[in-house]
Image: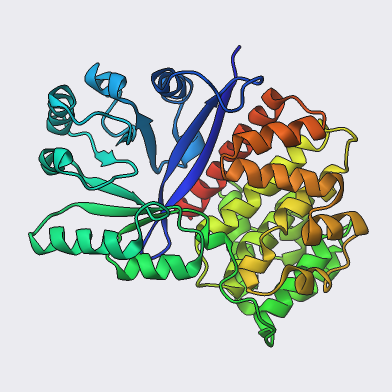
Length: 410
């Protein structure tokens, strides 16, 4: 059985809601940055994730953005799949000739959604625009101001094109791109702290930190957690609602906090605290941030027993789980971690990315960014096969997507 080396990057709208994911593919355990052709990479991705498998496993039912090279487009490869399956990204390496235009018109007429990837404005592409739905600008290659001029020009002409800003890496860039007229945004700007300054923590944030401290212990004290939750009316309501959603088939709903906590168990209780308590403390943060922390936690936990030397799975889970605390609470990571009674290995991993746990966290972050050379390097340092890393990452994506779907139905 071959392994699919797949990473994904979230795409958000102006309200910081995740509307889809770009799927990024690389091939082979001995070739993390492959010499294979673009067409082969695309076909492997489609075969592994859209034939005989549910793409919702990795995209949580949201739109999947898939790169298509020239050869796949002129062969009409997308017609093999339902038009709802994905958004077709026309690679920037495509030659805008007559054959490509004919393919684009046919795909458009069949109802497919088409995007121009890493678009560079040029006269040969002008005749394609009536059949395109989304234009992606790499703001590292095209300044936001120049892209904004292009957007305004087309909006003034009544164009219904949507514009996506790629490689948005800070909140300031997100705001600038939004003000320039972009509709969609790709990059990890949402996982960077917006303000790193000392400030008074609100009561809800203090409660969240105390809950974090409670669930980070090897043995969880349910009595302490019950006291923390019972003193917060909103949290109490969310806990009972969350548990009763999970136990809808029970004849009698759960009504006591102690019963609810016992039902959840340690692992789901940690997830509840991260997902619900933190979202209450920071309501302006995007859902993607919490999902990324959950996915990192699961990835680190999955991989903890495969690396050399092995590390405690619970410590690995907590390292991934707390790796985005600075972004969630807009405080320096060291300030927050020092308020939690975590062991030395987790503290060093989170603050300085040191030790085996720190390397594991670096590997999770490299996969988030589809940094294939760095993935290869870290896999060698941790003495774990890249095929195993790829499998565990894909499993963690599916696990996080399942939780996203659960959240969307609640």
